[in-house]
Image (cartoon, rainbow, N blue to C red; front, side, top):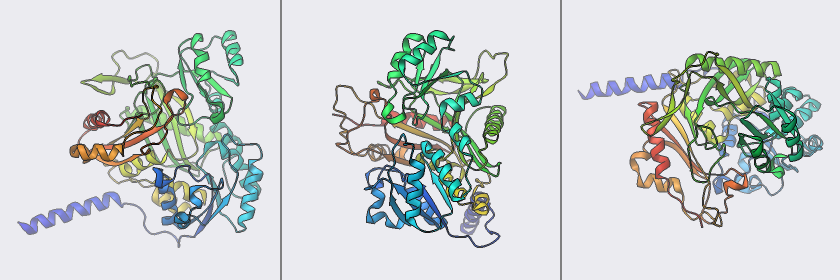
Length: 491
């Protein structure tokens, strides 16, 4: 009996190894060591809750030497991080960037003084300048105009045929609104935005002023776009592209935010701050195919044929919608289906992986590391890109939900975080929930000043990756329990 048990366990391990490691291990030749310039190192120190270490660990594992360009006195200059970089070149970076950024980058690369194989950034607003620099250095990169269109929300919307209007001040926007029959409800958002900051849902002309004043020009510039609000189910769609070929593709469901028409009510939050991202998507197969084909067509026509492409979008006139059932919000078939067919609605294109925490959930669910692949694509290591784009043989290993804990507190508080690590606290109190959490992270420490949501700055306190090997429904139940069990205070 004991030997039979050992044999069964051995067989189970063999099957799991086959599932996880079914990829071409033998390369045509030895891997070449490459040098990659990284513009913008990541602002958060890992010693202070930052989650950018995965990028540097991936580079080490792949034998890619990183030459980092960022502002002086960055945490990556400190001796304990010297092994993460080949060199650190102090370089003046601002966001929004200034017009002379290309020359600044070229000067820093010249100061490094050795050959390089590629240039990359994970800050969208720098891409057009990097394209200029790469062209002058003879390094392959995407077309500058493609990157300009992809990283500007207005240009993206116009490219795919949305009725969109651009303005750079309140008076200009009100003038546009008074002279045009705008398709209310609207979305108002900065052209150069991130983290859904400054994004507002506008139902009428009277709400425009409040929405426009909510945009922080110092962070996102003065230009913003006004376009139709699509109420269909929202998704993140991620592509691994090489020479225009899709090596890997996956879609996750972004559950409604507090500013959505069907969104939850959460304290003082009324914005498009992420709350729950569910992997894999529960959209009908034909709608996932619709997203894939439509978004891929846009990328290729635009000229974006290589890289990790992180797109956000919705399914307009979807056959499913979010409904609350027994306290759980999830997709269900629409009770009254419309006569018009579903269509893909593109919100934005990011020519980079989704954030580090989001990429980690893809890595654990599918077995694909977006950050490592982004580095390999940037140095033209095609053989290893193809090998490492293979997901688990049997598909996603479980249903997994990234539970975001956004910053929120009474506006009467100073905004000083007054708790310890809220993730460690929850998992110590609820061992049953801890066994369903694959990763978590608390981004704040006691005494840290955290911006209030009303400032327009979107801050996360923490995240939990909650999984179920049983069902999506159980994963959603567990995610709800985790959110309900979070404890923290501000003073």
